[in-house]
Amino acid sequence: MRFDSLLDSVGQTPLVGLPRLSPSPDVRLWAKLEDRNPTGSVKDRAALAMVVRAEKDGLMRPGCTLLEPTSGNTGISLAMAARLRGYRLVCVMPENTSHERRQLLRMWGAEIVFSPGEGGSNEAVRVAKVLADEHPDWVMLYQYGNQANADAHYETTGPEILADLPEVTHVVAGLGTTGTLMGVGRFFRESSPEVRIVAAEPRYGELVYGLRNLDEGFVPELYDESLIDTRFSVGPRDAVRRVRELLDLEGIFAGISTGAILHAALAQAARAVAAHERADICFVVCDGGWKYLSTGAYEGTVEEAEARLEDQVWA
Amino acid sequence: MAVEVKVPTILRTYTGGEKAVSGSGETLGEVLDDVDSRHSGIRERVVEGTELRRFVNVYVNDEDVRFTGGLGTSVAHGDTVVILPAVAGG
Image (cartoon, rainbow over all chains, first blue to last red; front, top):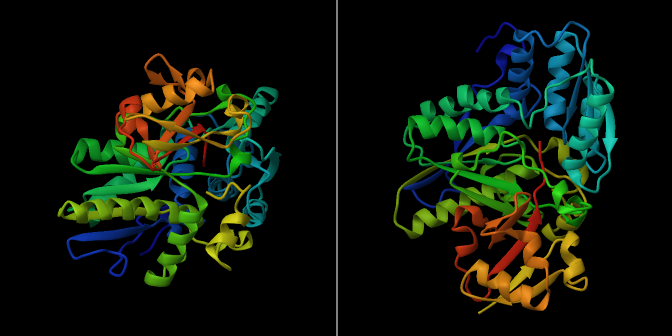
């Protein structure tokens, strides 16, 4: 495949079957390898779409400063796009994220403002909003409320899945900004409404939920619960266990959040087997495991890995 | 019909600091009523009228109850109910 530039190569990722994790020939699992994007994560789709739309809408001038709250991947994608398009990027990121994410952000030229670990990404959003008020000339694309984020998946990820797997019965993806599921969900609601849309949400340790009050909770503006059918909360133990199974049985080295997504996908597979129904379950591999090696998720026992992830924003 | 209800840090003022309390009932709503009878005020922080509060998520056996019948979600002996504030990802 040939492309005019790196940015042109975003998307069109492989869909691979998982013969050893699939419970039967009638209930099959398929992995959408989003780690094959230019910066190694699904967020390249949203980041590029947000930048392109903002440019089209005349929001960005050459040399302007972008600001974004992110737990990592969106920032890394934006940093790459910003570098190629000539923008400065300031990311607000929780302090309890992996070292590799910081290194990658800086490598692509982003500046990082750390937000307190307590409260996780909610705090990053809050701090970014304060910075945006202080710097009215900065452009905050704001992935949690930017329609271009969801539209990227409506226009590309969803159609790619349907083209490669017309018999798809379930799509399972992570729920963070909700962009992937909102876009894919809307696409399938319109094109194949019988396809079940399943969300897997990471369940962190207590520190991340340590808000001062419940009104500091946060639901992304993009989120529309009518576009999904069910939503699972998956803790680090199940996420680590599954991400190791994916590596051991299918050779795929994925990030920890993908383990959470696979856990939800396998639950759907088990339900289909129990109901004697055919199922072709596509799940999103958000990124590779490289960025999480320093967390210790891939070493020692599952219990040890779980303990190491306790205070981390691991998805 | 005992179920374990896991309480987030922010609501432990109602449970004397306990991370998890026991509740009973056939539905999530009944369980929360039962828990509230011993930990007065906690239900009000989770439920507004007949709906969950916007920034609170409740899971029965890890599944979000907003997709399984809300407060009417069936619970069975040995189930786990998790209450969490809504947090962002990305």
